Every structure is written in C-alpha cells, then in structure tokens.
Image (cartoon, rainbow, N blue to C red; front, top):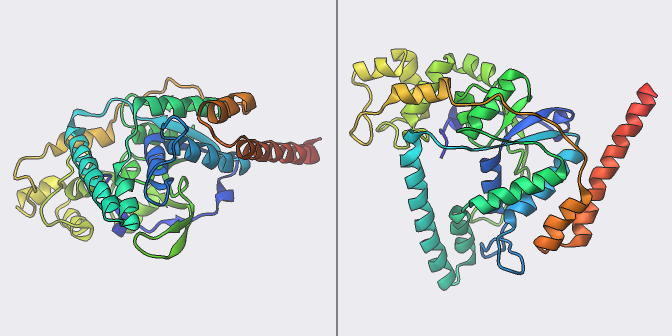
Length: 345
C-alpha cells in the first residue's frame, strides 16, 4: 500500500541523464511488482513462456536495466526480508485484494470486457519465491549487484543512501522518506509512454525526485512529525489509519498539536478500527529499522552467454531481441571508454 503523501509533496521531474554515473538503490519488490502489473497482453494475461511460466518480471527487469546500463546508471536492487510483525494486517489485506481482483478479472473476461479484464488483472500479480530467484539470477548475469535486506527493502535502501553507498532510493512508495532517505526517485522503473486506465489516452511518465530536506522545509515539519502524518494516514503497519483524516488534515493536526500524542490527547483523532494503534512501535520501525551493513557492491561486466541462457534457452525470449539489447550495453560501454581515453589518454 505505502503511505499516501502524494498530495502534500511536489516532486521535481528529472531527465534520465541526470542519474548518469550515480548508484541508485531500487526497492526490488516494488519494481518487480510494477513489471508484473504493467507488462501484460491486451486482455490482462501476463507474458508466459512455452511451458506456461510467467515471464513479465524477467522482461521488465531485463529491458529496463538495459536502459539503465546504457545511460550509465548504476542500479542496486534491494530485496525484502522478513516483514515486521505489525505488517501482518497489510499482508492479509493484500491477499484479500488479489482474490477479489481475480474474481473480477474472470467475470470481465466472461462478459467480453477486455479493458475491464486488463484493469483488474493488474491487481492480481503474485511474486513467488521462484520468481525472486529468477530475478536474482538475471541480475547476476547482467553484472548488477543485489542485496537481501533483513527486513524492509525500503529501509535498507534508505540506510544505504544515508551511508553514501547510493545516491537515491528508487520506489513508487513514499515510505522511503519516512525511513529517512535523503532522496527518493519515483517513476524510474516505469517511465515511458503509458495508457491511462479506461481511456484511449497515452501520457509520458517521467522520473521525478523528492528531496527529504526540501519536503520537510516546505511542509514546516520534522521527520518525526512526517512519520506521525504517515501513521495518521495509514502505513503498511496500520493500513486503516485514522477516521476522517486525509493528507491535508493530517498535516494541519500535527502542526497544531505537535505530535500524534498531542492529537490523541486533544481527542482530535480516532482510529478507524476502534482499537488502539501501537504508534510508538510503528515510529520505531521507521526511525530504527532492521538493516545490515554487511554487503559488497560491485558492478561487473555483463555475462552475455549467461543472460542468453536464462532468457532465450530457459524462458523462450527472442534471441534476436535479447542480443540486440545486449549490443546496446556493449556500445554504451565502448562510448564511455572512448570518452575516458579522450580526456585521460
């Protein structure tokens, strides 16, 4: 789900070229789910190989990273580990949402509503352990480092940015800001031309950046207060949030009351579930998350034969298309070496 801070923030569009030579820590699950949701047939069916195995995640991961490497961007993928216990309700909610979407998808197909089927199909995506293993193997073949976080991937990515091992976190969710990333880049894994839902209209989606210090200054709050705003709205650790509180009201309450405790003491807010929310523990998850500094970052050359073996031999991708994409990386690398020789040769 992620916390809904969109109304309160003003991201700045950035060209892909501005990330050249920069390392970015990508929320892997967030990115792969985007690929599974978007890369589908017109009726919503995901891409599959000859044996019926889903390949949408591999297609997105391969071609998007070709774009990154061609642009001299240094991606790092961070995979989720064990979720905090407080995330159990959100995990259960996602299961219910997928089950409902699957039923609506089948119903739309039965009545010949192709557009409706595709819309519902996007919410049915499931990422299995086997698919995660396939993604990691492909990243290895592309020479791209990946890290297994002990818990939340966004928390690990934010830690790496604060540590200086990456320049920005990459995710569609704003939770990265609550975890303290200095910079959040959105739309990087889904940029390009996209069709609007239920409309014959296409728009261009551009990468955009939110800087934490600028956001806090613009809103007139501290990071602790931004976390309290998130808890009022609902996070992955209290998905229902507080009754009748939207983004603007949450900001107003925290600025007036100083904190979530202050709002509760005044009786200004009420939990949707009618039960107490362990906001102190939720705050701790964002302020002191479980992360690790036991990792090694290295961007190696592409294992061309390894990539072809995974994509073409194992999953039936077009060899011509994959080889063409790999050649783009090789040409970009050659151009980079030529420029270095020009300046330092």
